[in-house]
Image 1 (cartoon, rainbow, N blue to C red):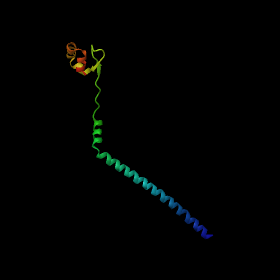
Image 2: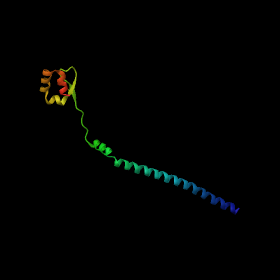
Image 3: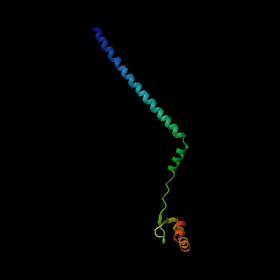
Image 4: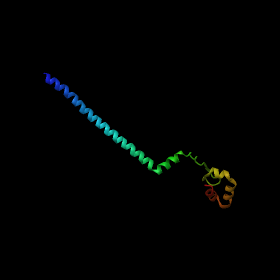
Length: 108
């Protein structure tokens, strides 16, 4: 009986060591794969100048959209409000001399 008791004690730790060794090998492979992925992605990001320019574009303050308005006497066409407010006299003069279409084209 002494032999059986000795074998049973020796078999259990041996099986446990195998399982532990397989699990450690799998974890190591996952760690190596993850490290390679992050290394390659970092190299790819830093070498691209196009992506750096895109990042700069996001750092610039946003440009507000230009406001428009219906052009007076044009039948509903739109013009930029800031250009009209700069020189409304010129708009009406162009409209009178060349027609509403010419005035709208000039202030778009």
